[in-house]
Every structure is written in C-alpha cells, then in structure tokens.
Length: 403
Image 1: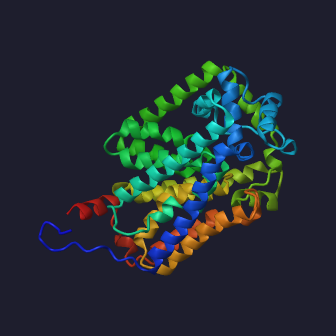
Image 2: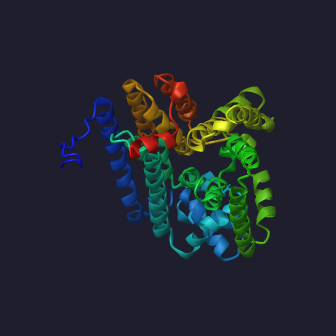
Image 3: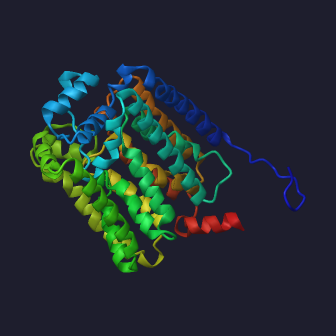
C-alpha cells in the first residue's frame, strides 16, 4: 500500500511495552469472553452473580411490586441461586435508575444475564473506541489496555453496572461541544452511581453557570425527570421504599474495600459522616482546580482527571467501579514516555482478574490498593511525560492527526 505522495506506507513498529500490553489484554479478553459465552449455558453461573439483583428488581417492577421488599426480593434471588446465607440484596442505585432494569422483567434469568453482559461489553468497547478517536487515533496498541482493563472485566464477570456510567461519561466528553443537550442527557448514566462523581458534578455545575451551557443542564434534568416519571408509574412509592431500604441494610456494618470506608472503620466505625468528608474536601479542591483553569478548561483532559479524583474520594466504591479510571489512564498512557510504567499498568490490571479467578472475593481487602494505584500511576505518567505543562489537549491532538 502506498500513500498519496507515492511513498510506500510503513506499518507502525510496536515495542516491547505495546506487545506486552497486547498479550496481557488478549489473555484477559479470552478469559472474559469464555465466561460470557458460558453464562446462558449454566444457570448456576447466571444465578450467582450480582446481576441477579438487577434481574429480580426488574421482575418486581414490571409487576408493579415493591423492588425493595425483603421477602419478595429474597425469594426471587434465592430461587435464582443467591445463597440464603447472603441475605436479601437490593439495587442501591437511586430510583431514577429503575427504568434501566425494567426490560429485565420480560425475560428469564439466563437470557437476561447474557444480554446484560453483552451490554456491558458494548459499553466498554464503544467507550474505549471513542476515547481512542478523541486522542487522534494513535497508531499503536496502547488502547488495548482499556479494552481489557481489570476492573472493567470484573464488572462484566460480576454482572455489575459501572460500565454504563463509563459510557455516559465518555459520551459527554464526545458530545458536550457539538450536541450539548444530548451530552447532558448522557450524564443520566453517570447519575446511576452519583456517589462516584461528586467533585466532578460540583465542577460541572460551576462550569455550566460560568459558560452559560444551560442546554447541558436541560439535558440531564429532562433525562432524570423522565426516568423518575417511569419509575413512579411502575412503583409510586419507590422513593419512600428506597429510603426505608437504605436505612435498614446496615451500611455502617458493611466492609467495602476503599479508602474512605477503611478510614472510618479505623477512626470511628459508627461515624458515617467520615465517609463523606473526603468527597466534601475534594469538591472544595475541585472548585479551586477549576477556577485556576476556567479560561483554558478542557473536559476531555481536566474532566477525566476529576473523575479519577472522584473515584478515589468516593464515600464507597468497589473494585469494578475502577472502570471509570479508563479515560484518565488512557490520557496518561498517551502522555507518558516511560515504557516501564506502561508494563506496570498492564501487570496491575492483569493482577485484578487473576485475584478474582483465584477466588478472592470483591469485598476482600486485597482490592484496597486499586483506586489509589490508578491515581498514583496517572500522576507518575504525567511526571514522566517530558512536557507536563505544555501537554496538548485532546482537540490539539485531533488537529495534529488531521493535518
């Protein structure tokens, strides 16, 4: 193949770091694909994942029943395969997220589990592909790490919903300049897990006011209002029942492997407010961060970093929520000159799925290192970028690729 100038096009050469990432990513993707394909063939696998909670909620909701009823939900979950000793589990996303699981009430457990897994895979692939395009379509294999990022794979395997939030955030990055209303509406997916976006949300509101980008605010307002209407139609007492459930599940006794929970348990186990101190403090810092950059603010660059900070400071988060770090990590991947750091990130990502395969439960303290590790790696990547202060934004990268 030749270029338009008549000079033969050369294939990009891949170094050791890229090849290592491709091999690790291929191994992880193969394991995850094998698991997803086995879901419809095994009722035991389909019924033992977190997905059962979403499916049981959809079953209740479609029949206009209370999705927070401990007896009804417990029966559906235990019949599906959740061990009785686990107790009754609930969908803790705010009630405006109920329409997301409503279609699951129409299908059986195995088919629902397969379609949910495929939806998670589609969200991951689409998100990484959009990020790759926004970074100028680099001719290397580094974005493969995003496709096989350990926390994202755990999300798919567990049947969780964090990749919906990732997809919503990346859609916002892609659309906020050209289609602001749709960009705002896409943030409804982020609102499924609002506790993971506190500093980001505070700065978003400040930016909307400062830039008068009210169509974005209109988009998310309409999306949330519409979902609340749908939830009210199927369960008029959803908010009351949700509040009752959240008060009764004993969150103060639950161990979640993240910094805010561990600090509370260490200092004062009964003081739940300690878990919310970090989001408050980082939100104040985020406003200062925005104020000093408001004239050159770039959501593709600064927003990804804010989401990473929000993840680390969240009042609670699980290892599978780490998929939200992908935009910031890909930015760091393209910025850094250190090939060693790339290999380290690939190994750290692979370790998470290896731990899960070895039977390490997601509630284990062995996952406590994950969110701080992504944050530390991002800072190191930019420190090793060579020109951290003059690093081009995504828009500049796109212009360079087009020229």
